[in-house]
Image (tube, rainbow, N blue to C red; front, top):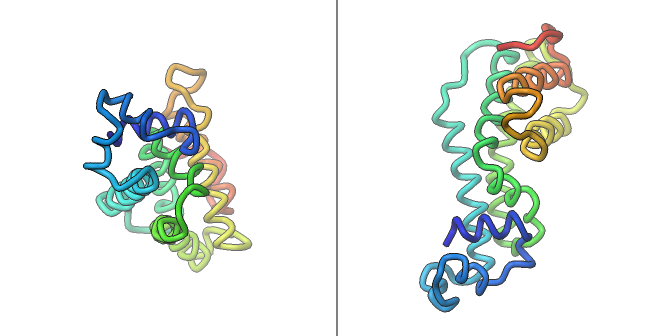
Length: 189
């Protein structure tokens, strides 16, 4: 049910998809879905919550390198691209369907997003303190960098002009430059 809803919401948009369509996609009567979810809103929330919880868990499971903020920023950028590249539909829904959440559900998802954003903000703050990163506003830089990294999913396709690894290298270089990294200038990795 979750996979079918994810696919339909990503393809057609949450507002355009009915519970009846989801049921048809998996070959059951619409009423059967209510054995597993209270309603369509709950299903959307579960998908978004699952994505954000998986993102935070995956980040917690990585072992960010110790050391300077530039090394940690590169690690964050690579992690973000790799994690999101494998979940295009979930990423699309997590960012584009926020407007369809109830106020209560929005607050939960927003809290999870802020927790993830705080990880990047801490790296940028460390870089400011070390003098190796220069951004005029930590919060704005955090939002801009995450949007830039997430944007890879909107256009990148395997088999295109650049490999995923090459795109990742170029994006890491752009992130470092955008953060005013002292050693930015050549792709790392």
